Length: 223
Image (cartoon, rainbow, N blue to C red):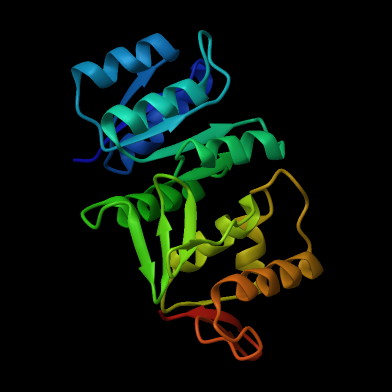
C-alpha cells in the first residue's frame, strides 16, 4: 500500500483528505508541523509527501529541502500561496508538483498517481527523446544543456510527460497549468507558452516532432 505523509496543520483539511485518500487505497499519516514531519520521516517509510508551505512551526520549504536531501521521495506542495515566488522556490527545492487550495480531490489523486508513476522505479530523470527532465531538481535539459524553463513551461512539459500518447485538448491543458505560476492563463497565453516550449525542446519548432498538433483536437506527445 502506498504510504503518504500529509504535512498540514488545518484539521479540517487533514480530516477530509485522510478520509478521501484512505478510501482511494492510500495509507495516510499526518504531521502538523516541521518538527513532527521530520520526526515521522525519521521513524517511518513513506512513498510521497503532501506538503503545505505555511505550517504551525517552520515552513514547507525547509521540510521539502530535508525530504529531498535525506530521503529523496516525491513531494507535492498543497498551498494557498499562489505567487510565482512560492511556485518557483518549490520547484527549485525539488518539488515534483504544486497544487493550490482549494483543489478538487480527484485532481489531487490524479496528480499523486502521475508523480508516483514518474518517480517510481525509473528514478528521477525522465527522458523525452533528447530532452531530460529531472523531477527531483525540477529542471529540464536538452543534449545536456539547461533549458531554463519558467515554472509554467515546466508544468506544461510535466503535463505532456504525464499523458504521453494521449491527445490533450486546449481545455485540459488550461485546467492543468492555469495556476502553475500564480497567474491567470487564458487560451491566447496557452498558445504563447506552447510556442515557447517548442522553441526550447524542438530541433525545428516550425515542424515539431515532440509536441504535435492534432488538428481540431489538441496536442499529443509520443516521444
